[in-house]
Length: 260
Image 1 (cartoon, one colour):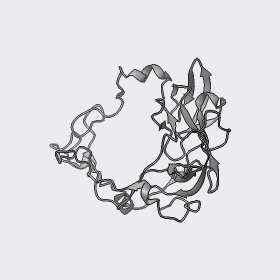
Image 2 (spheres, rainbow, N blue to C red; image 1 turned 60 degrees about the horizontal axis):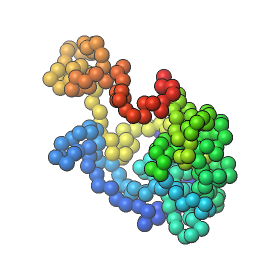
Image 3 (cartoon, rainbow, N blue to C red; image 1 turned 90 degrees about the vertical axis):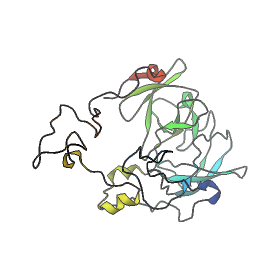
Image 4 (cartoon, rainbow, N blue to C red; image 1 turned 120 degrees about the vertical axis):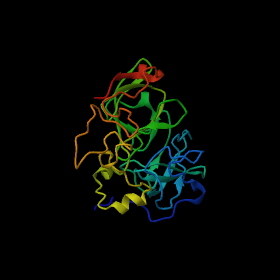
């Protein structure tokens, strides 16, 4: 079992005014039926209200703390603006307590600063990128994520995603410079089943050990072959090797190159 290195974090309770308790639904809808399996239990946790927009333009802020967030893989930073307002933002990999960051159309090219895509040179890595102007960051928000700028052309910026996809985004949208913190999150070795239960994830049973009435793979004496041509869910829906993206989705025109 391995754990994430928390030495860079500040030993401080989260700011009470920027947290709230989310109700647990254990994967159930308004009728009480389970619509998302394998959810339930888990440790109690508070949700941090993250400011993905960071829309206080030309107001400098100082990083007060770097904190753990139980609802995401990345670390978060508590920042204090010059006008006295505080907010939580996604911490970059190089962010430290005492650093100064700013959101501006022409902010300095420094890690953690937030500026318009058209003002970021080609080759730079960015995170927390807006897809729709003013909506807040939607791309590259998980631990270690970053997206590279490939080109600026005719009102659009071409971005290379970690999946290999290349897509266009309007170049007056905002993005933060750098890489999301906690880049070693993907190296985590869970080590024991109880650790997953603490995250609120319940056990997953393999289809091949079920009865025939419960799953297309069920039944037989001992271990048997799958018996169906394609991978299926317990409801018989094809789950592997089939495109699930809507062919008529409006943003298909923004994708220059599909992921592999």
